[in-house]
Image (cartoon, rainbow, N blue to C red; front, side, top):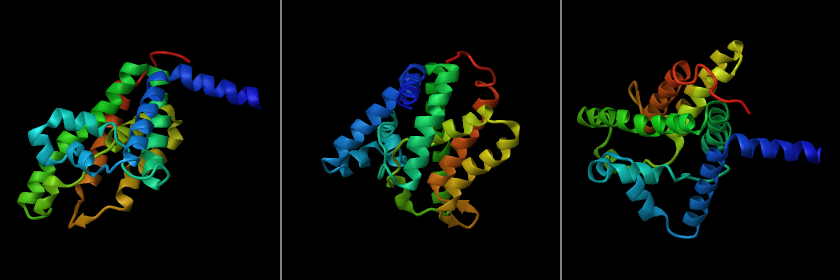
Length: 211
C-alpha cells in the first residue's frame, strides 16, 4: 500500500511538475494572505472594469495567484483541487507544460477580457449596477474552468454529456439573475468553459507525450 502510494505521488510529480509548482505557489500566497489583511491586495488584483483600465496586465497576473475563499469550500474544491490539481495536471501530463499553461491562460485571460464588454453593456442597459465596475473579481476560477472543460477529451464518449453538464451547470447553481442574464462571474465561467471545450477539440485532440 505504501509503495503504491509512493509510486502514485512520484508519478504525479514527474508527469506534472509545472502544475505542482503552481499549486505550491497558490497555497503559499493563500497562506501569506491569511496572515495579513488581504483586502487592499484583492482590490488591486481584481480583474474588474476599473482595474483593467488602469493596470490590466498586473491585475491579470496577480489575480492568477489568488485562491479566493476557504480552501475547503465547494467552489474551491472544484476550481483549485479538481480544476488545477486534477484537470490541469492531466493536460500537462498528456500534452506538456506549454499546452497546460496555454489552456489555463486562455481561460483566465480570454474569459476575463470577453466578459468585460458584457459587463459594460449590462451596466449601460441597467441590468448590472454601476458598482460592478469596481467589484471584487479575483482568482483562478476562469483558468480552472477552462481546464475542467478541456479534459472532456480524456473521458469515454458516454461520459461527455454528463461532464459537459457538470462543467456548465456548477456555475449556474448559485447564479444571480437579471432577467435572462446571470451575474458577470457566471458569464465568465461559461465563456471559460466554451474556451476549454474549443481547445479540447483543437489543441488537445492528440497526445503529445506519455507518462
